[in-house]
Length: 93
Image 1 (cartoon, rainbow, N blue to C red):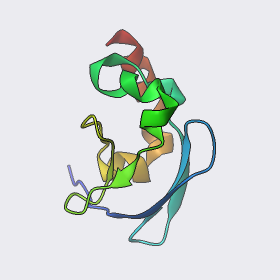
Image 2: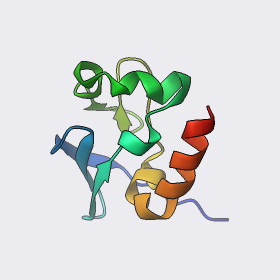
Image 3: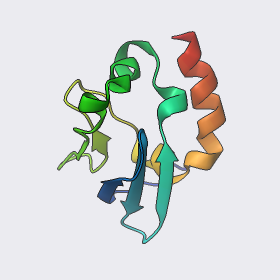
């Protein structure tokens, strides 16, 4: 299975838990992260002060937060394909 390597080139907070993410291939996704913010890693991001501290990791070129939470750039790029499965899994954590 082929896993394309995408890079996040820009991000912008556009809602409570929503970020517009732009990629090196010129595409973008507007992602509402609230449905996946559960568990040890992503649950703390429900704290809006922490969520708003999102940055782009200079090496991995993906979204990252001070608590170590991040997402694979390919997952972000193809969010509509993953969002339901991620939300279902996250609620089990």
